[in-house]
Image 1 (cartoon, rainbow, N blue to C red):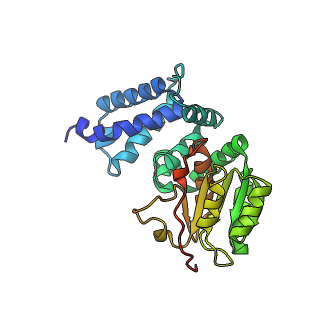
Image 2: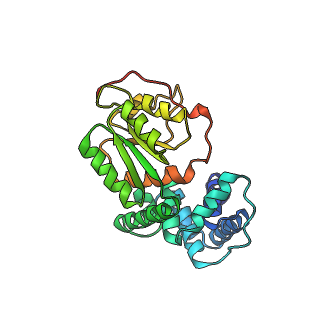
Image 3: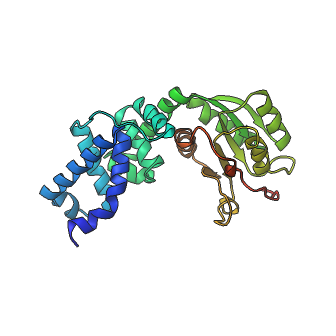
Length: 276
């Protein structure tokens, strides 16, 4: 198979990543063009190694981005969300920016992203932590936790607080969630599915989304009950038991990628409570 057939399917995604890195369509496309030129003259960089082709392509692109400057005048973003995203990225250091985009936007695992950035998984976790802190400094917000298990709620409070966010309260029931949000509107919600009094975390979230718009991360031991494929599903979902790094990455991703306004269609259908 020729180089074009091998690399062609990956080019749109490489452009997306490069544009996000550079904050400019023109600069991002220039980096991808430089990548292709490098591959033509050094085919061994791709063909001579075993392993995941996609990982190798992104690794080469990251090497180029760190070694040459093609940061041309930024193009004008098409919409408000793009402008906001560029501003958020501009406040992040280069390596943490790459780490965040590789996982949050391109969907690489921690192991794959560490290989791309040619660092250990411990080193990559440190970069992702730094990215989370930098996003938190720019986007520090009020957090509502809807969770009926005290130890889990404490863990979430600690993890989110270390990112620079403010905890406005922990609700154990649907009613408590509504009361807390009425007193102080949250900037993000982390919600369990089943609550202390048998009420539904989904219903609690829907109550709140009916009054204001806010990104929501659901936390559940049974993700298959939400990810059925036949109804509106949450964009952000954490499975119990969770690792702190997953919570950090998901909170940063939700704050970074959620548009300022969401349509009412984001509301999830109510679900009969199931004891977890």
